[in-house]
Each structure stands twice: as C-alpha cells, then as structure tokens.
Image (cartoon, rainbow over all chains, first blue to last red; front, top):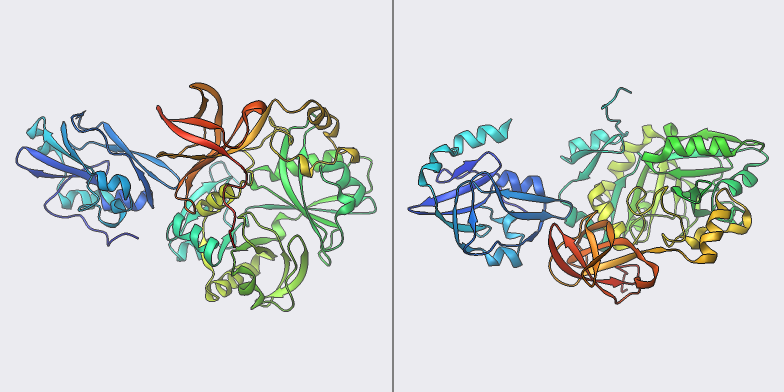
Length: 130
Length: 362
C-alpha cells in the first residue's frame, strides 16, 4: 500500500510522528511515514474546520485505521487556513503519499519561533530507529 | 509462566519471519496483521486466507458417560452430534450467563469421545467448569490444548488449497474427518469464523510450521487477528468478551437457536425463563449511514437519548463503511430503525440492519 520509508530533508518533525513544511508565515502539516506505517490502512480522516486554532503538542484531528483511532498532534501552533478535503474522501492517500497528497492541514503560524524546537530529518530518523 | 510473559504458538517463528506485526492477545503473542488488515480481509472474501488460531484451547471428554456429561455441560442437544460431526453451543453459568461459546467435534481416532474448542482467554475457566460439572458422571475431562496447533483456512478457494495437500476428500460443512494434510495427521473440520467456506485444521504442534508453509506455497494468504475480527464482525459472529460474556444470556445474544433447554443443561432453567418472558435487550447489528467508525463502548442513541453501547465496532473492508453490534431494548431492536452512534462526542447516523451485515451474493 505505502511508499518506501522516507523522511524528507526539507521538513521539520515532531516526536509524536508529525511533519511540518514551513513556507514563510504558513506551514503544511501531516503525519510521517512511520506514523502511517504503524497505523496500517488509513480508512477515515475527518478534516478539521478552516479557521480553527491549533496548539503545538495538542491533538487537532484524528485518523483511523481499520482497527484503531489515533490522535494527530500539532507540531506547531496556528490558525487553519486550508484542509485536505481530498484526503477526507480518499484517506488511503495518507498511506500512499504521506508527505504529498496525504497532507492534512495548512496553518498560518501563531509563533514562528516554535519551529526551532522541532527535529530535523536526521534527528527524527534516529528517533524512529530506536 | 511468569506475569507478563507471553506464550508463543508453534507458528511464532513463521510470523516473525514473515514480518507480521505481533501483539499481546489473551496471554499470547499473536500476529495482528502481515501486509495489512484490509488486504488480508479481502483475500479471504475473494480467494483464501489462513489464520494461526493455535492459541485456542481444546478440551477432550471420554468415558461411558461422555455423551451424557456433555449434554449436561453445554447448551445444544449433544444427542444430535453424530460421529464425525460438529456442533456449536454455549457453556453457561447456573444463572444462564455465557461462560464461553464452543465448537464440539466427535472425531475418530484422537483418543477422546468429544473434542471441544475453547476461546484462549476462557480455556482454564472452561476446564474448571467442565471438571465441576463432571461430578457423578463416568467421564474423564482432559486438557488437550498442549497437543494441538490449529490453522483456520477460509475463503472461496480455501477448500481447494487444502484438498490439494490432503490424502482424502475434505469433510463437508459442519463435519470433521481425520486425514493427512501436507503429510501430517490432521483433524480437518468444516467450520470457521469468517462467513466464508473453509476448514479448520488441527495438527500436532510439531507439524504446524510445515503445514503453514505448504499452505503458503499453495497461495493461501497469511492473515492476522485484525482481519479475523473484521471478517467475523461482518458475518455477525459473536466475540466472547465483547458481544457475549457471563453478564449476558444466550437469548438476548441471539443464541437461543443453540440452546435446547429440554436437555436440562447447566443454566437451562434460567435461560428457559428468559425465553418465556422475552429478553429485556437484544444484540443488534448496525451500519453507519454516513461517515464515522463506531468503536467498542461508544454510546448508541435513539431520538438523542442513550439506549445502549457498542460491543464491537470497526470499519468494514467489504462494505466500505463503519459497522458494529450492540445491545438495545428489545422493543427498539428492529432492522431499519434509525439510530445514532456517539463517536467520541460526534453523533454519527446509523441504521439497525438484519444479520449478517455481509453475505456473499454469489
């Protein structure tokens, strides 16, 4: 179902297995290859509301596999400016393309300084290798 | 066995080698999935899959009163269990509560008159209950769990795959035969837990890995407990500990068909009373009519009011929607009734459906 294990260098990572692609004052968020692999077949993703505020380290949505529900933790704080409706109707995109078409939300950053506290790809790779 | 130490089936090495994801289940370390729950589920619905169910237990009964004893112990009419036959029943407490649900076989050549398969989590309690009920009967109750590994092979192509390895014709549905399969002496049973045709094969633990590999070579897909659970839920088979248990009687669970109170089995009087009065609640099956996946424990609502709780809930890979079962007041348990399930604070629409939720159209 999924792609090869990968952790792109241009992303920043949260230890709860979430990624952020930071572009100026905005960031796109999703879950990592490791997270989708642990979950198994993702069968349900209900995108949150545009305009909602999310807080770093707090759950902002859920994904469900056949067997289990998992909280998705916000790697950064901010206001949701876009959600991936397509992943809502095709949740398997979260397995097949976790860093691309399987993105979850786009936020306007509340505190750009928070990004300094995220892991780079090498540090996250070490974390999941344990 | 020390606390926290998980038991391993004879097929544990096969699961590890195949990269299965292993989880604790009823004191055993068992594969929950290999490639993925949905793919394994669909392999069983469309082709064939195999499940290591060696964690399940076996209780043998033998002696001059074996038939009379089993008639006393389990809920079905054991006089109708012919040689080479299979029969489903409940093991009940005196108050009618369901201690376990069981398949009993009357096999030839295994040193017992009857062989009863137990759920892993209940095996020790079932053995104790059998021992307690054996008083006054000329019968010996023997723990045969250490003597068997068990592989369930299920799906429309399952019989052909097993037949290709077997020394003689496979037993019909609800029959059991002693054959050689992949060179091993086996008790082959025409039973299962998926809603598909297929067999369950019992062999000596030492013979299990070679049989597993032979089945894999015959293109049978290895499947984990995840797919076993979604398949049985679509077929509306009960999972003991979820949908049935000591606090539920067979009538409310929809298992009255396997209770023959006139035989006088232990618990029969209590069950006859429930049958006569009608149960307060009934186990219903439901499907979501919109988005959302029901999970065990989620409240079930009717007209906004809580009327029950989900006992089993999952995404259905065959139907592509959330499905589940739960107990509702008998008067509101009709198929077609619109209900809601409170899925972590969000009310999701659902509808009571007739059982089973999934049935082969072919």
